[in-house]
Length: 347
Image 1 (spheres, rainbow, N blue to C red):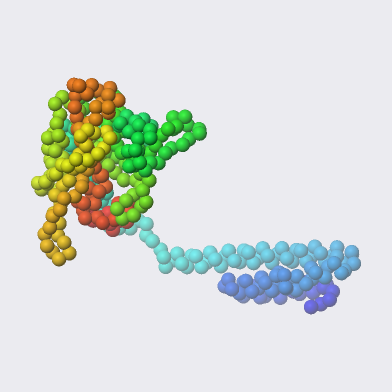
Image 2 (tube, rainbow, N blue to C red; image 1 turned 30 degrees about the vertical axis):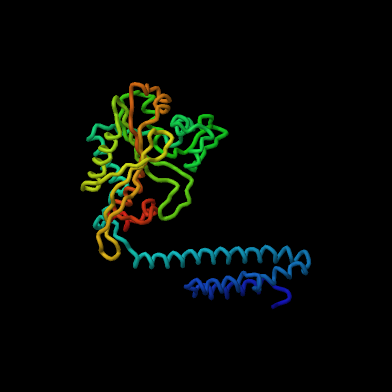
């Protein structure tokens, strides 16, 4: 390393760098060249360090020349890097070329099994004279609980772990929840049109569940409501038998037993006889709990401005998600919320 760099030495270094630079054609060589030419440990780096030891006149002469040398080669190396990278990319594109004008066979999707079964159920019920009703998923506590004979501090609220909605900006969201069942639609429909009424209410509901193979925090439900004069449990049983037999394309046996739900009196549990083949290939059957139901509680009718002395009715609610799992033999509820095409194309 010369102790005192001169303009002549700088010019000679520049000429030597030009000869080396013109022979570079790959990124690794370029990286080495840049380090040796303008890097901190290069001659240029040492020359910049020597400037502080030189007199003022020499600094004025050499300083701008060293800076010009540095700027030139930094820009040259940057430009060369871009050119080499572009050349590499162009070569890669030649081998990876895709003809976007070429036609490829379309990969057909399939309607989600939940949508398939929901549409089938809607068709069955509309064929029996039911109306399809819808309502909000963010609901007031009154529509979700109080109007359904579940007032504040009622122990039945512990049966449904609830997502509460708190908003300091939107006054309309105060005392609101993500609906825990679609029964809120029944209340809204009776308040809107009174009785008689015959509806089903399919839709998403939300409960604070630990997610596993059989539980999810969001699932689909179908609730039904019939209110008219002289409605009885036999109407409820016949309706569910008709729907289940149509869904499974065979005659389904239904069993009714006592159960508790605060919005119906009497409350009923509905079971279905489920036939299956065990691991040994033997045909077996057992009763499976299918849904909760019952005769609409007089308090619910009163809360909906319907006269319980004149009208009676039945209501039921079942998990559409669970019904889909039963129909298609799906063992993990989480698959229904996945986007796995291989799973969905089965249906």
